[in-house]
Length: 280
Image (tube, rainbow, N blue to C red):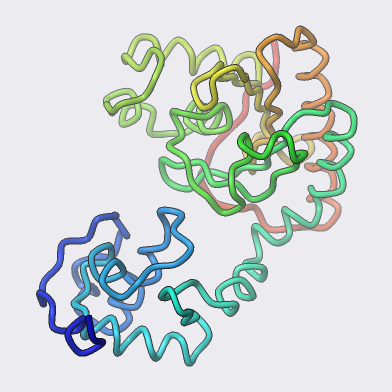
C-alpha cells in the first residue's frame, strides 16, 4: 500500500485506549497531539500510521501532519516501522519536580533495600485510581516481575495501590467500583481490608499480579507527619517466610526516604490529602 493510499482511510476513528482528553480540547491541535502521544500509554513502543490513528481516534491525514510536527520537535521519532516516543519526552519527564526529587532521594535507599532483601523493589505514587511506578530494582531472573517505570496499574491490583486507596478520602467511590479484579472486591470485604491497612500501616497482595509471588507495601511520609507521599514495596516468592522482618526493613526504608525528603525540602508528589494512621 502506498503512503498516499494509507492516508486515504476512514476520517473518523474511535479511540481504543482512553486518553482522558476533555471534549473541549479534543478538536484542537494540542488536543489531537495529546491523543497521539497518549496512544503509547498501553505500552506499545512503535506504532504505524494506521495503528496510531486507530488507537488515538485521530484521522490518518491529521496523524501524518501533526505527527510530522511532533517528530520535528522531538516529541516523536520516525523509524522504518512507524512512530515511537521521542527523546524530548524522556528529557522533560526527568525534570518533573515531584517525581524527580523523590527518585533522587529514594534511589540510594532502595538500592540498599534491594541488597538486604533480594526482593523486587518498587517505588510508587498515586495518580487518580491508578498506581504509578517511579522506580524499580530487580535482577535479570526477575525481569517478568518488574513494572516499567512510569507505567500504571489499577490500584486494586497492587499492594501499593491498595495502600493508597485505604488512605484516600473518597473511599465510597472505591467501594462502589466494580471490575475484573481478582480477590474479594465487595464493599464489606474492601472496607474491612482498608481498615486493617490503616491500622497496621502496611498492605499486601498475594498472587494477584504474578502467580507464585506476594508483595508488601508501606507508606512514605514526612517525619512526624501523616501525609502519604509514596509507597515502597517488596515482591518475593510466596514460599518465603520472613514477612515480619521484610515489613520492618520496609518501614525503616520508608522512614529513611521521608527524612531525606524533609532535609531536602522536596515538594510532595501530590496534594492527595492521604493520611497515614499511627500504629496502635
